[in-house]
Image (cartoon, rainbow, N blue to C red):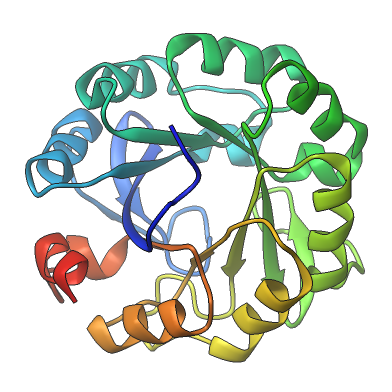
Length: 242
């Protein structure tokens, strides 16, 4: 599975307590629930998704993977033709290895990469290109542990550092606009894109097709969309065609 040969719109399936949810600004109990995560994923597959973005939210908050069954079900439904990237609770190289053996294409490391940068090189050595480092920014600073702790890191500088360590791609989420359906922060995305040569996937704040287009023009390799799709602001098909 190559790294985004053309710009992609990637639907998010965030799993909490065994259900598909979408949180507002990452607040643990802020979200709306959308039922069975495998059914949610199947809906996006039926609409033509080329990649699925899965997050074990319980894992992200608690530091261990909780929704493994749901994730395995979605990987199974996706088959070999659809890319799957998974994050949330991946804290060790062994955790990553388990998911990659399951058929996941990319593992998303956030807290683990910040706390132990060498884990990126360790996983990449055995599975080249498989590590997507997640940089979540709040007020211009990278935050971890379910967006609850600041790190003092600048997102663009951090992205360059992880590229050197072997990251195959960067997931850049702007927490300030996440889940609010109030639009994106294009400049923040451009800063990260301009700093690295690996694909940058943008996430957070996408409200309409204009936001999707703006992120493509900003140089993002793909955009992850959650709330706007679930709330019917636009369809995945429309976004892909646009």
